Amino acid sequence: MPEDIQPRLSDEQRQRIVDRHRDSLTRFGHAPAALYWSSRKVQELRFRMLCDIGVSPGDSVLDVGCGFADLKGWIERWRCPVRYTGIDLSPDLLEVAAREYPDARLVRGDIFDLSAQPESYDWVVLSGALSEPLSDEGRYAKAVIARMFQLARKGAAFNLLDVRTRILFSFGLQQFDPADMLAHCRSLTLHCQLHDDYLDNDFTIWMYK
Image (cartoon, rainbow, N blue to C red; front, side):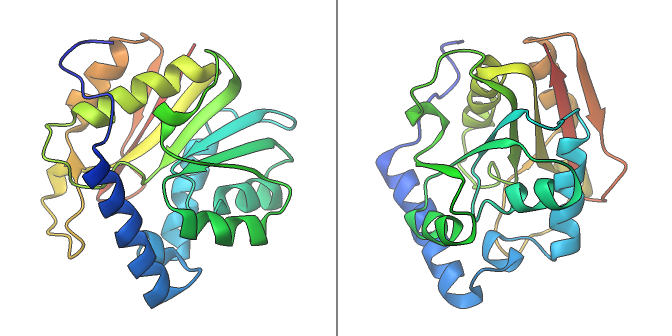
């Protein structure tokens, strides 16, 4: 991994994420707003864009920054049964996830805490989990994407907020340049696709092995 990519969150950054989600869960409960989604419709549109990469019945899926693990429920309701693993820094969100989806494998931490060998999962996906502002010019996000692709057998998919919209988010979320992120992904694999026509302020990248 390139030396200029930050591979870890600091303890302070990790705690800030945990505290923000504890506060949002207290205010909104088990709802998309607790994860800074504007609506369930928007949340599930992002889920569809991720799974359209090729998730099929029986595949193993790692959901990075899984929150309430609602992706598992959406996949199994609208798509197919999968072997699901979710990982998230927030113990509060994972507690809700464990109640809602008792058969899910849930891990506390970020992707660099996960002791898994390369190509351990068919697909590795991430929805909204890289929106925490870190003021690091995207280094941590790029490191996460590289690790996602390393852990995937078939491919990885993620969504990010699009800086081209110049929307001022009340939650202070981080936005990214699609061209910059696509160039990073192409440094890992030439088999990439950028999708930016489904929402005004969002884009998804698919990366295939």
